[in-house]
Length: 452
Image: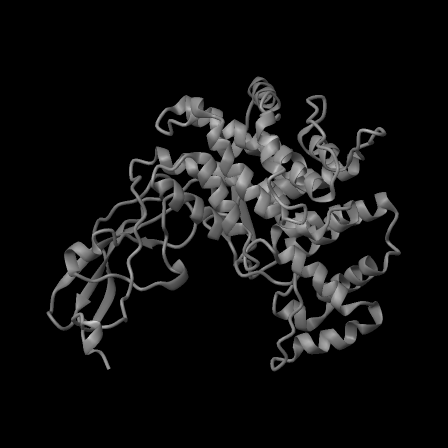
């Protein structure tokens, strides 16, 4: 069996943009042949160093085996950085706590797209452009009526977002910077309309057209909950909570759906098809369904007096029950998004006067235990963003089937920003992962009449 080892050598390597200049190589040693190979070590602004193995197969004849890409950087990006050990999330260098408490969603959209916060004129122009693209072509509305009334809203979103590519041939040249810009604005502007219409169709209510006199979050809530028969008042508290949820879900580095968008886009697919692919990936319960799972868990527990029973089960390593909405795969510290959303959850409950709702009393008691119980604190099992967003969205009247749609609404700006970055990268090429083949060795065809 071939044996390979690696060691770090103090030789000059390469550093991507934003690096700190700490350059070296890793030497790979093939103990069977005795050959040694040097591979550059790349150093980013933050985060672990990265071994550049782009030439690994050509030089050595080996591939790497990394199911789930848990140790593989699939791109170079300057959009979002996460340090799960320290509980850090930054967009373009700005901490998420500052953006969520001091900024608003459209300003964050501009930041993700353009690498910096806008000045007043830039923001006005950007907001105006978004408002000019909020409506849908009337022919697209007929597309909604092709779905069954009980269709899941995410199924509708995959279809209608992908269908946008049939309506905008004037912005489909992905190599044209102006076309890309128009496409990004259309995605950001039309996602709230498409999401609200998916909900309206599912409950048999008429579509509510967007209103350009409202801000982004308020306009979305109006399209979701207004009816033609009477005026609808958008609470500023609820609008602000909605805006924060969108900010906190705007981008999260190279997660499954973002990687899907990049892989789809690597083939030069149009941006609307790529976003539809991202929505499909997000639909998986292991990715976008966590806040819905939180509500299902709360309903399963049922009442405050049953909490001790389920806490004991959560602590029992032999019991498959887990408290949903606690801890995070990436964050081994307090999820910085949850810290912001926690206050919004309490603000929403106060605004709506429903703190006495049994499910919310149950959620708040679970929150108290998680923040005080030694078992949870020692294991960093704090409430995460999904715990609080589920509580907020239920309080605001969103059905569970819409939770992942709202995730997609917020994440769409991250997807389109990552897509633009990929298209503009000088290293852009079609994605082509390799495999470890473990099937049959070569064998020959046997005619049917000769088979046993």
